[in-house]
Length: 305
Image (cartoon, rainbow, N blue to C red; front, top):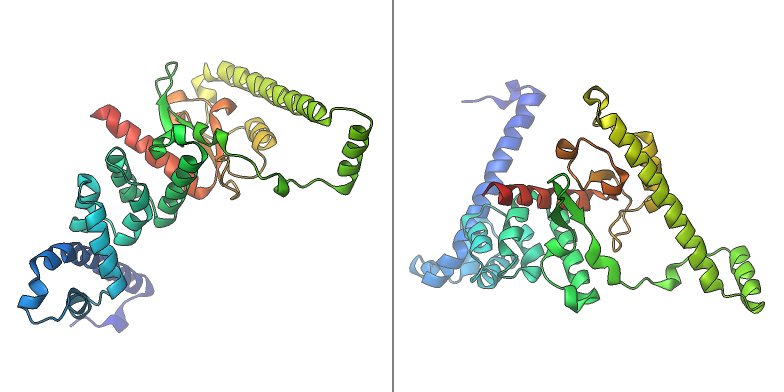
């Protein structure tokens, strides 16, 4: 008999982790069986009053989880890949529930792949972005791949992440924070008959042009350095970090996301481009960074097929 008291803290923690992972795996597999158990009324044949009693006594699965599993089975009945994830127990029902509302015959294979590798919160973010994109533009509704998707650059033959579907989202002007001094100065100009819209537009256009010129200069400098493989480093240069922050601020580059950016994501994979061109770097929050990499992984798998 194993004496747990003789185990080191490290070994005891490892054992807890191992048992915990196995428990969760078998629980998922049990839940995946419930739709078929319900169809066959198998619980009645073994003296259980309902599928809920069966699940509770057999594996400690509560009623809400049973209902969720049965509802997901109906939702995924025509979606082979998602249905397989459910009944096999490969992915938990809580993760599948996050993407159920946005699943279609067209995107179900992509979603199934993302469900395998993304955490629950990232899937929730993915689903939220899809719903927002559909609301923002009926003409552009569809798979999440359209809101944060991978294109192939003809120049470098590498995947590029785009964010174009959010362009039509209307900003909330009430969230604009102008100091009393700026408000007064703009009002004074407007009262003098000066078109402040044109004035602000010129300022913003000049700002964008200046940033674009700086990015181009940085990109050209990096292109020269890339000709010397010994000088290539995976570390993003300080000049690139500064111009990215100057352009995007401190928030995630996804227009609908207000979370702080945590990662500088190469929309053109560095492993293939060997370049830190600021035109192809976007600051992303943790969840959108995970989503971007999941899409990149799906792209690579598609290319290899």
